[in-house]
Image (cartoon, rainbow, N blue to C red; front, side, top):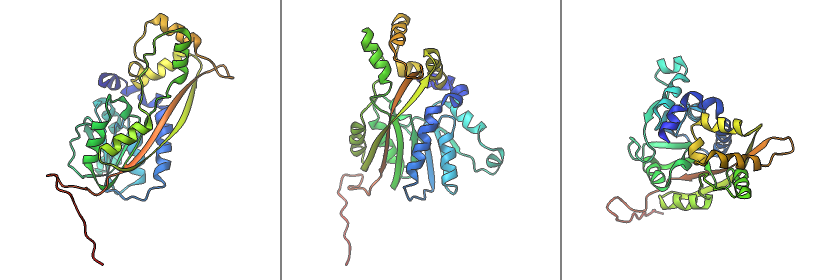
Length: 272
């Protein structure tokens, strides 16, 4: 999907209603956390809403904006105030894959990732890499799509006997298990449903195209099947088409290591 996200950089911001709402809810969760990171990273930063929120919240921290679609980083640069750029206080831009970050181990205090991890076929390698770059005591804060996303479309496809090609997303319990497997301590997971409504299928498809996710989200079906599915998509009381998105929120801390690199266990003694 790298090409899709690159192409969508020019239209992403105007269509990113869901991402902005999810980002606002992620920020509310950070209100409950006492942390003063020296370096913060927005992984899958898109056009920069997340990194700007982190800059506002942690003005003394070095901000890193990371995305594997280079045009998205160009959009972040365009959105950075000129004075900030001249003073060298704008985000450092990194064109990189979350599974292979060009960052030293233990070099980041807070990692933020808004609606990116679900596009990976297997999130565990990404969690391991994020664990590597976080310092001990560092925090991972993320949001991702859950399995009940677009349940209305799936129900419509089932009613007309069409194939369900929409992407399947992981349950929050599976994600929690992956976090533990990657070395994180005591992950906290919760879920909320957000429903957007559209006047018709064309508006829905246009949004997904502008975000660069249409094919990745919906898969590929013949146009005749899509016409049948859209005809069976139930409208709400206002005559609009509801599209539900299950949002899984997670945060997890990097604990003290239990063993060192050569496999020996770490045992700590406290004097009385």
